[in-house]
Length: 159
Ligand SMILES: [Fe+2]
Ligand SMILES: [Fe+2]
Image (tube, rainbow, N blue to C red; front, side, top):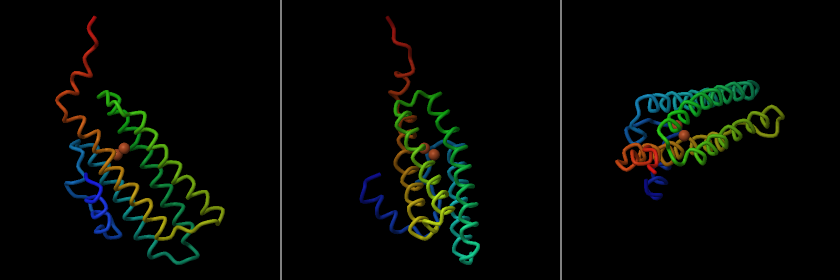
């Protein structure tokens, strides 16, 4: 997706993320998991907009832990699929998944230590990461899977 188009899409996105066909990576299981991941984000967003300040930190920690747990499950599943299909950018992709895990881990730690509160800026960063990752990075896998040349890569090199 062109950068301008992506920025525009980010701007027009309301606080919640709406899954539509443009998010599809043409894989039923992965699309289903991305929808679930988005749902977890949307629920987290709603909960945190309603919570009062006293309970906000607890709510935030629980919501982030849920997000971390699901992302972990999804990343393993996705990477497994990529490995089975010989996706050439698996290592770089795995690194991005790890970065997300670290980001969420740091938010949880900082909230517990009281150095940050889960505010709209933090939620926006998580949202942008999630949306950009599916629309740009996971899409690269989708493109690879529809590339007719990919089967060539799977064949053993003949002597
Ligand atoms: Fe991914
Ligand atoms: Fe994904």
